Length: 203
Image (cartoon, rainbow, N blue to C red; front, side, top):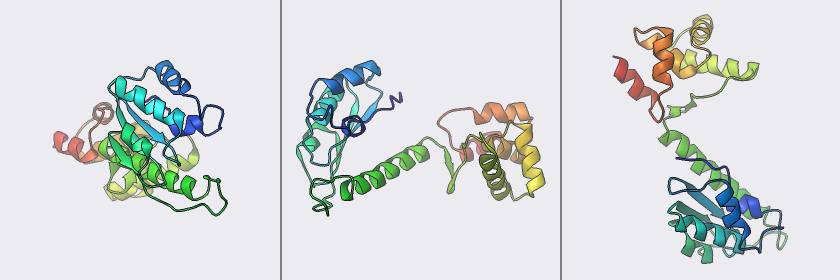
């Protein structure tokens, strides 16, 4: 799947493009949207022109479309293959969709992104094992994950991680299967596979 790093709701949130029907297709074209993509359109009201035109264009190119609206079923749902449309009720401050609607949207997007990570095989149990240890805090997190999964002491986890360039997935494979660090890294780099599948492959 191609990731274009764009959502109709985010691009329209500043207000400058909210009522424009040309900007969304143009933005999606610039990002090379194609039939392998998924576009999520977020419109609290369910009728934002920018979002509608973005979803309409996405369908024209064969991309999958998802609509998120927080006022119950709305017009935006007619433009999407899948609709997520809770009704959060009126805002405490009329017109301030950053409050209840914004909070609901954040929760929904968190659920979607977590589900995607699980489907891509990036989760083992309740651990996000493909963490990129770019700082000391993340290196410590990686060590704790290896300690937990492999049931080893901190010193062993650190050595395993050092042997494979601090890849949690590769460290677990190295500990669990009779392979070299290079082989562990090669298996770990295979996309869209769970750690359990990779462990089974090596046994």
